[in-house]
Image (tube, rainbow, N blue to C red; front, side):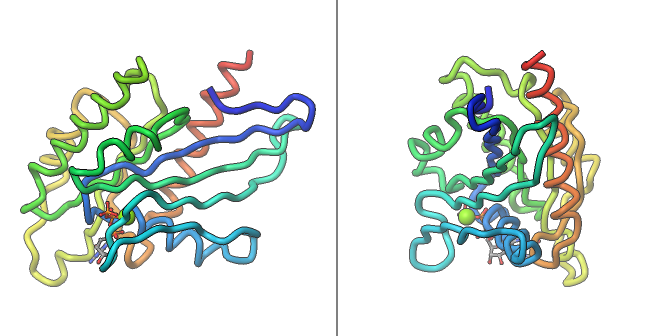
Length: 201
Ligand SMILES: Nc1nc2c(ncn2[C@@H]2O[C@H](COP(=O)(O)OP(=O)(O)OP(=O)(O)O)[C@@H](O)[C@H]2O)c(=O)[nH]1
Ligand SMILES: [Mg+2]
């Protein structure tokens, strides 16, 4: 359940970008940060290891104005995708309101995507939550790579591997070029807000 401050008439919404290492979670947030720079007052917080791997998480807070008389504050997080950082992933998931699963469309990453969904379900189970009950958007990232002759997984395969049971809305995207990055974010914000409003009723 989102953090609601009745006195300040404020709702905090936590959205987590989850997925395998190097899938493009941080790149999604970097694109959003650049694109909405003028509307985002705070810096994007990001802790990276050598190279570009996320060590802890990225954090990007911004406000989307009032809904139903409440100031809505959106907080976007990423988890570190590397297998060894599971304790951090679990921690970042705490109190999550909505999830974007960033899958890597590269054919060589097929198994990593499947394992990451499995890992997400296990970590949610630790909070007695079911992925089927949480607003979720699937993003099939790196579609730009097909232009370079890199073998990508067909959408039908990605849908079957990752989304057959979940049936979440999905987007083909390129976080690097910005294709469908904002569409993904808008969708998850809308779904999450609807879910919170239903809970408040
Ligand atoms: N061609 C292409 N490269 C991408 C895309 N998205 C991300 N990348 C590249 O893939 C690499 C990993 O991207 P990150 O955003 O750091 O991946 P991550 O999911 O945050 O990885 P971890 O922090 O290790 O979990 C970087 O070199 C990005 O530039 C994309 O849509 N297309
Ligand atoms: Mg990252």
